[in-house]
Image (cartoon, rainbow, N blue to C red; front, side, top):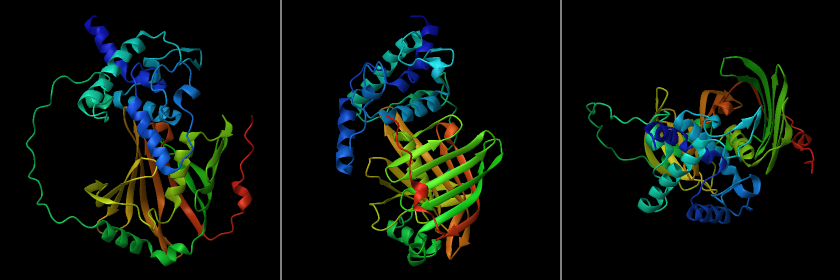
Length: 375
């Protein structure tokens, strides 16, 4: 094999996994996920081979992991589906094997999976990002070593209970928060180019909201009602799938005034991190569905500044970051008036700026009704 062929294979390696066309067994990963679902009392969702065509490996893995894998690979290499897959006109044909890069990529992915299986007990330690670091050509020359700054003296780690107590007090106290049952929020959804579009949210905890954004091409709307949701815009009008629901529930969670409520999950102190120019104390835990979550609390004010939820896939971690900014007092509680959500798939990034928030406003339960799913 020529050197250019090898390079092309390395570049294409990660993208083939987007559609699950691998040749290596993932029994350990499948079993782990099944155990997570059983532990969380969740009904099994469709597997990749049940939802997608020509699945040659990764059988048994949840179909909802396909898109997180795509996000991770694209970000790791700075590449797109077109580097491995083919299409006819505007129609993608992911199931076809016509692109030779995909064939070479399978061998590269198998090598990566085998490294993890043989040397790391099946844990995903070696990934696309391990070598690529966001570039299509993995760097082969290490950077010149820079002198390291002296590490700060270690002090006693703060207790999770103390950080949480300060957070609750900073928001306004448990009693004030518990009085709020509904929220009607107006403001703007800000696009990446700085354009703003009118936004309205009706929220009733837990896991119920309607969201509407007035776009030039027509309104974009979504609804979440517990375990089901709906999307409607100029391109589609359909029930939410598994990944849509995960994002919708994350949005509903971000609209909760208190992001952590009693009984608190088992939280551990995970050091400190900078969020902008603020120093934060970080607490981390694992959600019932197996995802990891980290919370960054402002050391000085106690307010929550960042939440990062990590979805674990067979090839790496797909993070979702939510930043809380511009806290102001509304009805005796402090709430963020800007919420930014960032994904590896930048298409879903959002910035929502709120200008009017009403607590305990009347919200008609009928608003959360969902259309019947077409068979």
